[in-house]
Length: 234
Image (tube, rainbow, N blue to C red; front, top):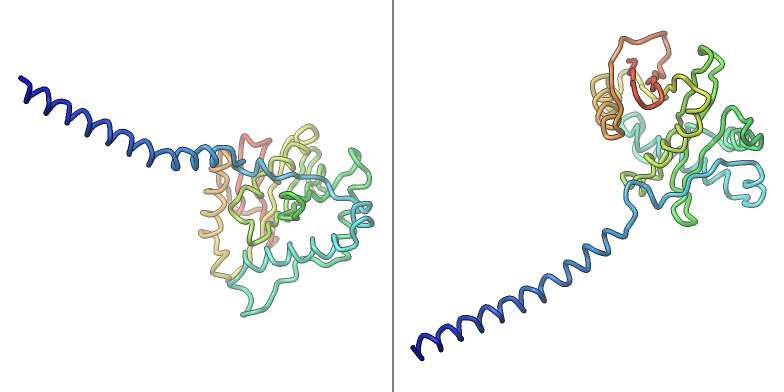
């Protein structure tokens, strides 16, 4: 009996030691997990504001930084269209200045440029338009969605889209999504671009229906009826 009690005591001691060791190993992981849970996800740490000419006047470098960000983003997105070291010029400083000035009208503005910041760093931008001049009444659009290459995949685009749609929703019955398609470019072939768009829109939780192309524009659109019905035109 005493031998069995001694063996049982030894076993219990080993179990206790194993539990203590296991707990010590788990604590760093638990601390890391707790820290990770406090880190904003899905762009929640991104601040999105509407750009104005007053902001550019206070920060003379803002216009050129926006231009540089957009052109870098488009160069990465259309990397198959340009040679090594070549950069796509999607926009210039004059265009950016004009877009910023549109935001000076405040709530009455039709088209504005949304700017995304993480801390004090400019990490993305997009435009939103309440009424397209060539579309039916109640049709708006967001586009020019650009994210700094080093910030891609970190929730910046999602934060910009949320703000753009929130601005358009009270005034629009339908929202068109602008994207670029270049004929003959392997990166933007119809099937490839369609797949990327559908995957991303599925991530945003949008219902999707694909229709034939409308019009002759190289730049196609997706129509988003207040984030409930999505029509992709190719």
